[in-house]
Amino acid sequence: MPRPQRLIASTLLTLILSAWNLPSINASNVDNGDYSINYWTDYAIYPKRCITYNNNDQIMYSIYEKSYNHCSDSPLGTYITSVPTYVNAYLEQMQENANDAGKDYEAPGMADYVGCTYKQLNGKDYYLQVGCSDTDPYSLAVNIYSDAQCTTPSSVNGYDDSNIPSDLSLGFQKCTPCVIWMDKNDDEIDDGYYEYKQTNAPLCSASWEYKETCDGKCQLMAKEVKTREGWNKADKVLLSILSLFGFAMLLAIIKKRSKMSNKDALLEQAAISAAGLQQTHIIGMFCLLILIILMFALVGLKKITWALLLILNIVLFAYLMKLTVDGSVKETIIGPDGKIVEQADSDDEEEYEVESAAASGRGGAYENPDLPQIS
Image (cartoon, rainbow, N blue to C red):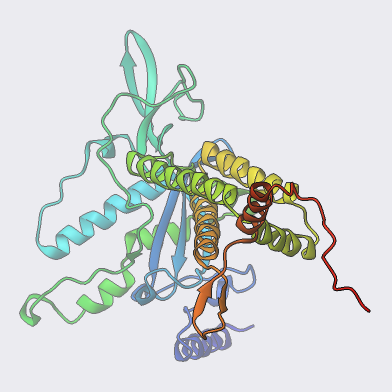
């Protein structure tokens, strides 16, 4: 394609994408699937963590097209770049922000180790460079290497971090706009200030230029390994209270069942049989539930332990209330005079009849009634 036509095509493509609020694309990079971003006003960067990938310390980050969404929408992609490259761009961005605010920027001590720096320690030659911390994926450390290219870590007991204090924070897990505006009066700026701010974003520009796509295997390294929290003091107190409350209700249920009348016991047994169960099944399920709650509590599964323990207490409380209500209700009959007369339980009636028979000397034997003679 002739140069004038190529220039016209590139201009038209840029205008069309600008109208649709899409990043401007450099026509020379269309064929390889990449594009350059000229204006960084609406973009944001989200550093995720520091990882060791392909034997190199890398910063994993995502770039978002709409900074006003605070990195809550879908990113343009997730990428990685070397720690020294990212740190150097970050320091340039901090220097740029300080200059824009009219302040002096004092670089942290770790800035001296962005490049591979020679040091002699205890008579031995070593090389130091900023990299990932061995203990925290959200912090950096000055690592020790044995070669001048800082590619071979010199580790002791599996650790290659030096004892140099870590005084540099990259703002991991924070959404940072690529362009940070400062409060300025119109007298303090010239006509090219806004154009310069929108096109000059050292951190995002370098991160975009030197990015490598973070594939599935790479992104798996960013997944958090969640550790279960143990039972704290307040949890243990509440757990003890609920357990004691349930045990007290269980003792009350056993006591009330021992005083249950034969009629109520038969009705309850009939209801259990109608459900296709037996009393042994109920006891077995109760013991199994207690065992499950105990197992979940031992492994630290708080939510399911609380849920099952509350359900168990509610069931015990409901059954205890049922026994209490049933035990307080007595059958009544209406006497000949129209008054309500309480009827004694069947067990008490049987005992009374036996005692009456014994007192009369009949001993419970059947006697023929006396019939009148028929003439």
